Every structure is written in C-alpha cells, then in structure tokens.
Image (cartoon, rainbow, N blue to C red):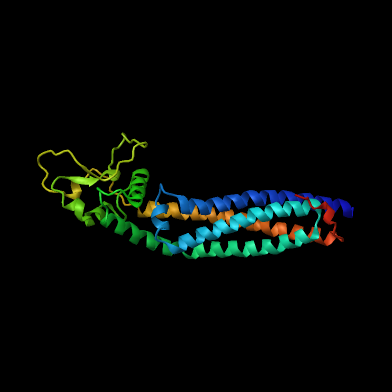
Length: 267
C-alpha cells in the first residue's frame, strides 16, 4: 500500500509540475507583453511608470524561474531524487514569495497607475505634433480609434493643444472621428483632419468637430482593471499549484529513504 501511495504521489507531482511549467510560461508572457506592447496605451504607460516596469520584470523573472523549476520538479519526481526534491521545495518557496510580492505591488499601485495615466495622457495630448512621427502618439491614436473615445476626460482635452487650436479651419484629431456605421477598423488615421466647410463656420470651434464626445478615461481604466485582474488571477492559480507542489514534494521526499543518483539522467 505504501509503495502504491508513493507512485500516486510521484505521478501527481509530475502532472502538477507540467501544469506549473505551462502557467510559468503564461506569467512570463504577461511580463513580456507589458514591456513589448506598442499598439495600445500600455506603451504610453510603461515608458513613464517605474512601478509598471518593475512589476513586469518581476513577472518575467518569476515566470522564467517557474518554468525551470517545473522542469526540474518533473525530473526529481520521476527519478525520486531527494536532493532535487529538496531544492525544488526551497526554490518553489522563493518563487511563491516573489509572485505574492509582485501581486501585492500591482494591487497597491492600481490607484497610482490611474493617476499616472491621466497625467501622461493629458501631457501627450497637449504636446501632440501632427508633423512628427512618434510611437506614443500612434499608440494613443490607436486607443481613441479602437475604444471610440476622444481625449481623456472629454474631447475638450484637445483644446489644450496649441497647434490644433491655432488652425483657422475646423480641424480635429483624425483618430477621434465618429464615422457612425461607416467604421473602418483596418485603417488607423493619425494627425489632424480638416472638416468640410459649410460656409457658416468661423474658426476652429470644438463644438463643430465630428468626433466622439465621450472621453477615454473610464473605458481605459476599466480595461486596465480587467487585465490586472486577469494577471492577478493567473498568479493566484499558480500560487495554489505551487502550494500543492510543495506539499507533494515534501510527502515524496519523506518516502524516499535513500539516494540513488544513478536514476538522474546523464547528459
């Protein structure tokens, strides 16, 4: 009966480590996505937010080590090597502490991220230059076009842009244009566009702009909250698997009474 329990524990530990390896890859992917994203407002945030960058690097490091430990845990479980099982338990504990720390940092800094987002976006809108190619400007154009919003609090945020308001014709941000049912999701328009003149308009009045009236603040913050929730949820799932893996490794380690290093694969 004892031998059967050891075998069951061993193969359960192997399966947990396989799942552990996959979820480690997911965590690493989240960190890489935060740093590499160039098509949404994350690229705007990560260039200015030290807390977001720090959290991303913690996720990448924890994800990479998690994948490595999942692999070593599989070897230790199948070959019943106490040394590997002991190291596996110790490193698993360190990974769990790192991931909990990263999760707490993200949770505690959500409010700070929202404040940083508002100041970053309003500054970006104020300094937006239609004749200058800039990745941050393109990212914000993408957000406005995809989320169907304009400005941060409202489209009036664009009145802080001196270049736009100095235009004598009715001119508006192209990515804010409300086309109704004629939306073209494949074409991203950048810079400033002039509205067709009807002869009665004088100057560049925001009330005459054919743009979305709703600001992006609530939609973008909801998107950030949702995605941070997903990240924290994945971390929570990994933490549960880590705890189970630690328990199984301790149980298996207690039943392995002697070292047999001939079982360890030679490369």
